[in-house]
Length: 97
Image 1 (spheres, rainbow, N blue to C red):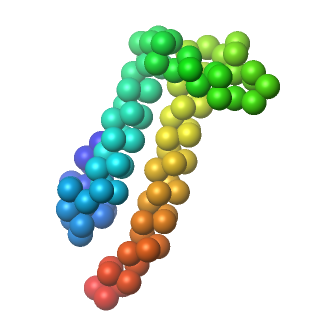
Image 2 (tube, rainbow, N blue to C red):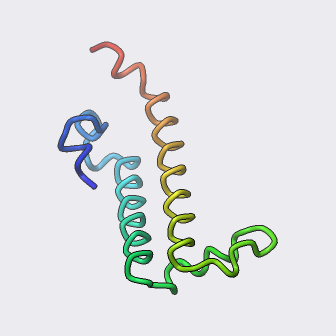
C-alpha cells in the first residue's frame, strides 16, 4: 500500500501523510486490502452486503470471490477518480518543477 509513496510517485512526498486526501486514500487502500482478504479467505459477511447495491438483484447469486472482484473494481475506480480530481486541482503546484 505504501509502495507508490516510497517509490516517490505518490503525492504524499509533496503534501505529506496528514493531508486529508492522503488519509482518505489510505483508508480506501485498507478497505481494498480487506476486500482482497475477503475474496481469498471466503469472508462472505464482508462482501455480501454489496449484492444489495446492484440493480435488479443481479449480484444475489454471486459468489464471495465475484463480489470481492466487483468491490475491488469499485474501490479502484473511486481512488482513480479522486486522484484525477486531486492532481487536476493541484496541478499548478507541481507544474513549476
